[in-house]
Length: 88
Image: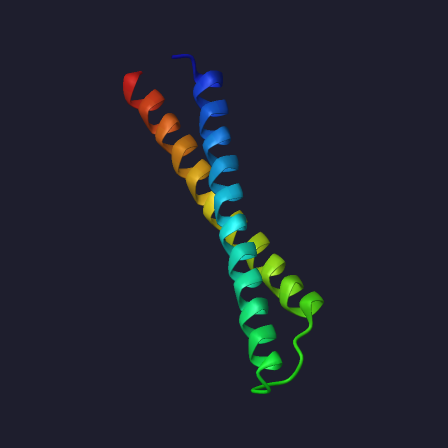
């Protein structure tokens, strides 16, 4: 395969990883809100703020998904660079 095609494939994998991790944190935030809301309705805690909970989940998701996607893409591109140098 040609190098630009491989680079794009690694980038596409990074995008997929980013989306998967971001979705996991959004789902976690949703579940957290629903737990807090159920506790509130049972009289076991204060009323939760959906905005605060989801903003925190979105922030965690953005940061952690970006870190993991960057690691994946950097590892792939580094592997390509090392392999290209070893062929010469």
